[in-house]
Length: 527
Picture 1 (cartoon, rainbow, N blue to C red):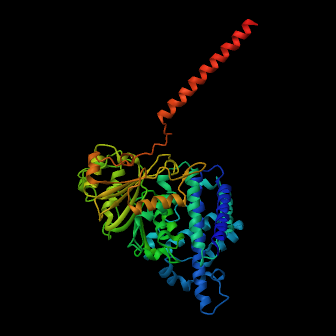
Picture 2: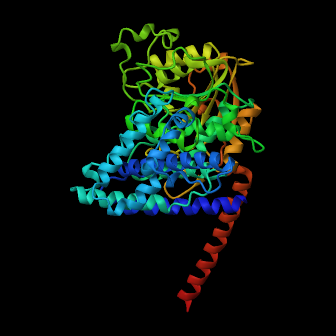
Picture 3: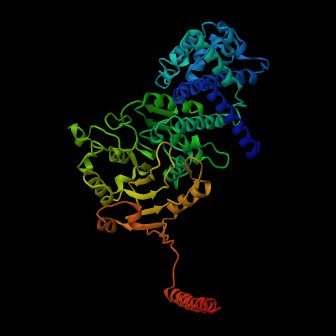
């Protein structure tokens, strides 16, 4: 299938998603309906994923007419144990998306039917390795919520429209390219709602172009990694982007991440969406570990092997316990700097946490609020610790207005524990963007320009500057890119001699004109 045809199919899918979302949205906040759309997409996905898997096994055994969706529930029970062990969950034929959708319009108890099905799917994973991944996964798809309608009849009508809309999506053949298309559809919907629901882009969604830049930097120079980690993983798009970046010559990038995808998220809704996103990208249960806790106060993955790649877009300047919690100053993540990030600005706490979780040969690429690069107090002391110990590999100034919900020109801080030299590269990428209606966007050329500048690690006038630890210390540990990269003066250069000559010509011409005007006046007066 050609790239053009794939793009056409993707655009068709995006238009279908927009139509469904627009039809369902009504007077309810789109961000709430996003959970219903995504949850039902997920329900369809796992239904078809399981059905296709069982059908393929039977077809390969010579039973060409077999269709799991047409079996009775009693007959299907034979497959439960094997499917739970293999896929991590089980769905009876009567509870598959296709069969529920077909009967939905005539089901007066549709909300109860769906509620029971979702509970059954979660319970099918109990006692297995996938239990944690499925537990509470459908909590945000509340089929009894007043958001769907004030009465049971109205709620069921909304559910029928939702099921029909999701059924109408052309998702193609899961065995070929449709899983990626499904993931792209998910990210499209996330972006659509992040931009229209008045939510913070930093909290819910990182634009795909920024995700790609971060992951390209984090895996630069590597053909595979042990695992990837995001301490504020949101919907998981940053984690999953690594698989795409590592995919080359038809190879599956997921196989290049040996131990899988790890993350932590404090928001319950986005935590559930992240787990759903893993399934939508066909990540097996034993290849991802997403935790629901406060990363700074109750970090998970303590005992895990350090990560060779860390990517993150943590929330900007949020409050945290800081020195109100006497235990934190002795926390091995924060204690090396000798000071905690300010209680009103947790940015540097995320930086120190990521550094602590980073492998000796690893790279962390983190989107940062620009203020942490120059503010004084505790943040300056942490910067000094990072610089003096040669942990800061690069600082990149991004263009403004890239993220949904903020016009601020953010930065990327790149951390390494095993640097080959004692310099830090500063890159001014503030002009690398394409202007769009609501937001600026990084094009493929912009991404290549920034990444190549990072990879080449050379001084480039007005663009990039290598600074030693001593030079940074001389600047009082200010890490703002503008401190090191000279801005190009785009004002017109004026030759003062040429200008004076032009002025002399103008003055001379004015004198001639005055005389001519005086002669004309004299002629008029004498007439």
